[in-house]
Length: 533
Image (cartoon, rainbow, N blue to C red):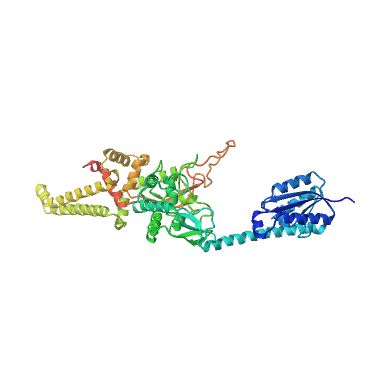
């Protein structure tokens, strides 16, 4: 009778050696005894030291497979199932591979022998159990880390900016402590951004000049300042609450409650003071559906877009805004230009809106409305009195003399109105005569073709607020994002619709200071009013 040729396999991970005391030498002793008990010939022993059982490719196991593939091996013996594999699929794949070379697997502790019908069935069941046990271990490990975090121990890999990792006072693990230099950087950022209201680029330059180092890279940029300062998680940590896997953990606070509240209000305000960067006309004027200010974004060869900053947070971040979709810069800019042009061309409409919203605007705007009403009242009185005096026989110099007080009042109110109108329109154009000329030319010719600088000054004058309140399917491509094939055309890749972005266009609501807009429109009837003084 032929003697079975047997190879043995042992594996242990470093973590298991520490926690359970399992050793490679213990396994080898037991495997040798099993070979002798079966009366077989021991032709090889393969070992993986400090290698996880979840890996399908291991040096020792791969060498064993090569030995079996050469033929002449009848049995592979290991101590138990998780020495060979931690998953049912891995175990069954190995069993099938061995069987293909006329070899079988024996596991001592489980009494498994795939050369028998019962053992072949048991291999599948035990593989499932091994995978289940591994998932239980992972769950216990995760829960243990959460419990440790709640107790104040630091269990993550990288400390948040502003903190460093130190040994816990009780000797159990580590905890977070304030990193003094980084804490000074955060407080300096608060002072520059929130208290002084400086631009992000100016703040970045200040931090670099003062040798305040960022958490990553060698220097601050406007983008890195914005990414850190506008997210709620860093502010929450600096206020004394660090989040680990959704669990709130108390840490030393870097900011006072008042500073935290001020910073949160600054984040919620969306700041409109930042100037346009590059070719983004509506930077500082456009708000996304979430209420945050839109940012201009051009990624690689893609078309320029307006985007929500928090749309690009990691997918698991609870602050990510999935409902804020990118919108085409060109489509949005054109829509705003057309709407502003339409409103400026309709002083009657603007006047009606101004009457309805008088109380919502500045003192200067209310004064303009009051003066306009006063001029209209005096003109009505002049018309009525002139008609009555003519009926009484007044004419010529006598009529002019009788109406003189009303005409003087009309002249005074008109002069005051002209002065106030000039003040409102010059809020944006200042005293630069060339800028005034550009604004007048744009307003009296084609506003949709005005350059971005002129248009931005006009938006500032009108105190414009542009809100993306939703999205609607593009009518050109019927919401597909691609143009339909022309009848009889040859097959070719579909052309991207240039009238939308991915089949949708923004639904915009444009708010203006209607009284300022009305004052501006009225001056178009006399250009010298803008140029005077």
